[in-house]
Length: 225
Image 1 (cartoon, rainbow, N blue to C red):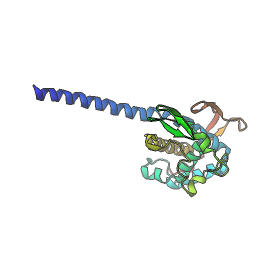
Image 2: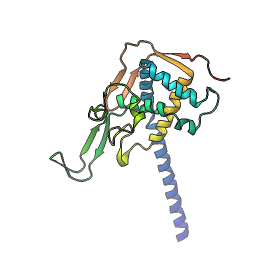
Image 3: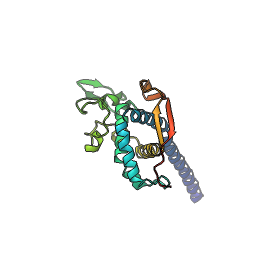
Image 4: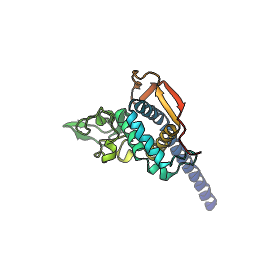
């Protein structure tokens, strides 16, 4: 029966489509776990070394939450976290979680006066772009305000890559980081066990924090109860 055959085919297609969608969603979530964890370590490290920045961060959070630590966080709250977002981006610029971006050429091309065959793998050194003094004033200095004054020039800040293959989970990643940073610094005081110890990194394709020893204490009560 032709109609029955079509129904069976459509069920197979729908089931396969659902599997693909589930796979994409899982990839979006799982793909950002390591980079998010590393970036959070970078934020904690820089906040410990820049108490003036931490003061401004907490001023922003206390203003947003009106000193009420009990209410649920909303998307409106997240949209107001401009300085929090600037801190996250500056940490990602200084210590780029994903150091390289790879693209494969589909056709032969001439680049920098050299012929390249199809299927050539090209790697963009993102960390080098983020530290380039042509694009960034005092590129090795921690300064979140550089993201408050204006948007970076195109292709000079590639926290999530760029182009048609930009990270599909970028919005989720930024929301997750804002939630984590705000929850931590609204409630806790975090200091480094050794302020003179350098940040321990495993430098490969990804900047991974291998050790960060901290002291965690409850922040002094100042919220409404």
